[in-house]
Amino acid sequence: MNVSRRKLMQAAGVAALASPAATAAGAMMPPNKFEGPDTPKIGLSLGDGGALGGRGGAAPPTPPGAPPLNPQQAQEAAARRIKQLGVNWVLSGGPAIPWEESSLKEQIDRFKSYGLTLGNLMIQGFNNAIYARPGRDEEIAKVIASIQAAGKAGLPVVEYNWYAHRSTEGYFEETGRAGAGLTTFDYEHEVDSNGAKVKFKDLPPLPNEGAHTLDEMWANITYFLKKVIPECEKAGVRMALHPNDPPAPISRGSQQIMGSVEGWKKLIEIVKSPCNGITFDCGVTREMGHDPVEVGRYFASRDRINHVHFRNVKVVKPYEHYSEVFIDEGENNMFAVMRELIRNKYTHMLYPEHPRALDYDRERGRIGGYPGGGGYASFAFQVGYARAMMQAALTV
Image 1 (cartoon, rainbow, N blue to C red):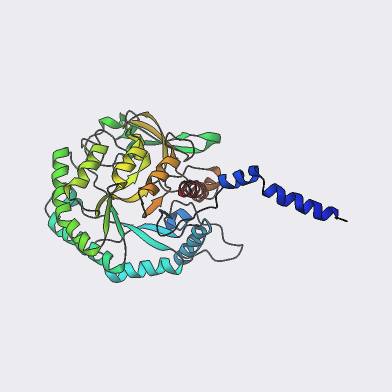
Image 2 (cartoon, rainbow, N blue to C red):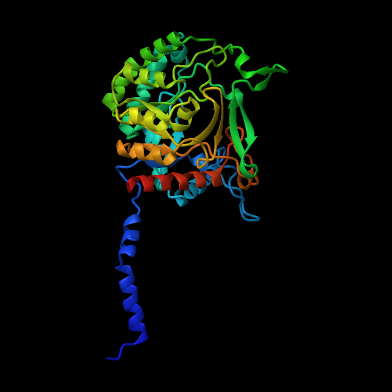
């Protein structure tokens, strides 16, 4: 029988593919599973794509002789850059309260025209409610009206803060690998205050904020939640309270209700509802000395995580001294965090935030945000890493 060399090679290839070793290798490498309706949704903001005034850095230069981009063109370009990363969901800051259904629908439709789904808006403008000052009932009424508008417009999640004071004065830049910028917080860090160097922990209360105890702040948010969450349930809108970040023990004379895991747990017991949830930040969790896998399991198993911030840190002293680092080099096991979210069927947005400052981004213009924070190129790294963690977690 006359057998050609080509047929012998083909037969050898088929035999190799059918061998136990090849079969085992194939079993070890299942096909990728992708983001979908039943998975977390990776999201960014338009600013992360380099929109005007955003954290993605300056918009790319226009060709010689071409007019500069107007704001709408800049938004379209930023949306395109986000879509090029495979990101289909966005978050944003909301307008002044009270929100109106028509303006929310207009914003949602604008994102939709870019191929993006708006999944989270930040609400603010109710400091009288936070500090229990005159006018808080009027502000709470505006928040409720905004929630009702969000529900009618089809917005699923509204995020908010409840800071007595946010300790951003304690941030400063340090140098990471190959000169990249890191964001560091240190309770003992010296800052300029009225021309003098003062440790952050010794800064006095601000006149417009005052100093507040835990009891005060818990009473204030309890009053707020008992009025707002029942309306959220009617509207089909979930609230996500962001933790205190930095989680300093005392922030300009005030204690912080969301500066501990115990505080997070207490919050969701005030009104027992999936609408009364948290933004689970695995970076803040580690900053407070806790394992985000265990903490994530606690809240996700109770369906109380309504938004996720997915980032990494290295901690020198819990609550007081840490550095926000690249997502692949900190103390958090990011794969284990992602796997826990998926095991507990978390399906809302996941924001791979706080990118590090790369030379590539710095060379393209000013980067907004925190000292040592980065722009679009670093977000591309964050997104790619988060997607890899998701695809791996979906296969186990």
